View 1 (tube, rainbow, N blue to C red):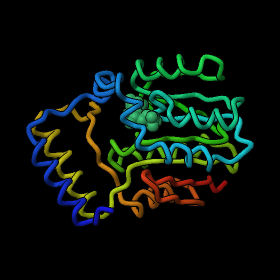
View 2: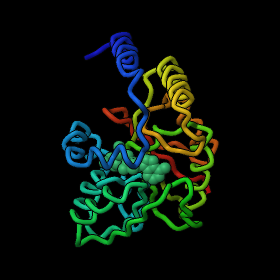
View 3: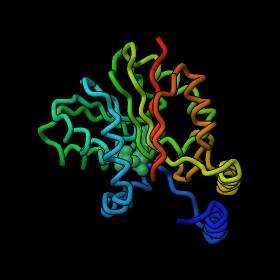
View 4: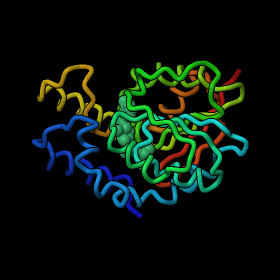
Length: 232
Ligand SMILES: C[S@@+](CC[C@H](N)C(=O)[O-])C[C@H]1O[C@@H](n2cnc3c(N)ncnc32)[C@H](O)[C@@H]1O
């Protein structure tokens, strides 16, 4: 297994090698890669399985933020085909593929930015998100997490499966690079681009706790899975 030092060396090399590669708009990034997307993501297979496993039994109504083609839902519906899911994603092509894969499931597709989406109040047994929120700064996620917390039924859970920075150096390095590249390309403030800016586990947990969640479970696999329950 790679040491943290080797990992950071590799990351710095990759940042150096890609410094002139232009940032891509988020939805366009996924449209361009749709064809090989599921194969590319198959390295996370074990994490998708675990993600479905931690979903408490008895969840009937779920909101999936950044559901993409629904790799996490493939496993969740295997566990319980009756679960009703609303999936929010910016990218229509990804949602279409999901709907084509699962014509018999209770699925509502919402093609929208999840920061703008209104999830309502006390609506969901679980809100889930896999490998999507590491593209955004904590300043933006803070408000979203509060909104998610309010949208959950009493005792409902938020399950986040995501790329977590291995150390503060990684978090700070990627944030600095993200800001530099946006500035260089004059990307408008509200435009979404595909670039990874993960938080450390401590910082991600702090955000969730500030939003009103009690952290109940953390599984540290290929993707880190954090389960928070609302404190109401
Ligand atoms: C790496 S994919 C993960 C998809 C799926 N959860 C999975 O694990 O296969 C990230 C997804 O998040 C979506 N996404 C990114 N930012 C978003 C936003 N602000 N609102 C809605 N969807 C977003 C992208 O369009 C993409 O489908």
